[in-house]
Image 1 (cartoon, rainbow, N blue to C red):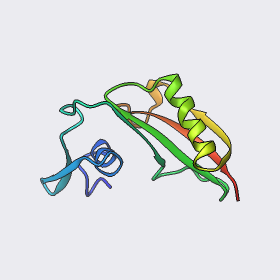
Image 2: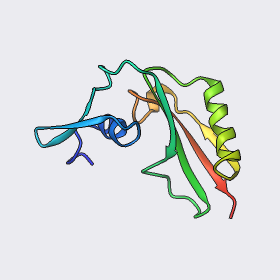
Image 3: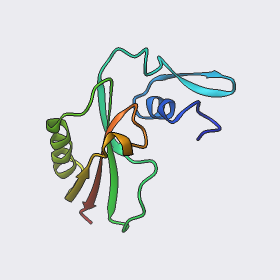
Image 4: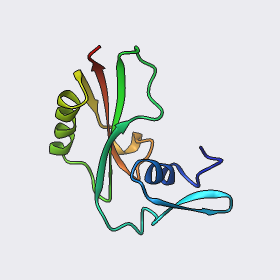
Length: 116
């Protein structure tokens, strides 16, 4: 990942939010950059780097750029996981700022026990 993308933020913006990409110094950069982006957006997707869990547990991430997630958005995503994605049970958490692996983009984690 670090060999192809300038940063993990660029990877998330390009692969999750669909930002355009441009090569500079042989690495992909998002266009626009996070700092240049003007639009607040959020997306709920499977984690590309999930924790090791039982096969019927799926790790999702709710990402949001330009603003922090609200409690309502976090709860809404959990409801969506149950109703649209087939989760029977959901454990959700948001790391405190000092423990966030990617502090530039707010995000919440969901471990979902899926229907078989």
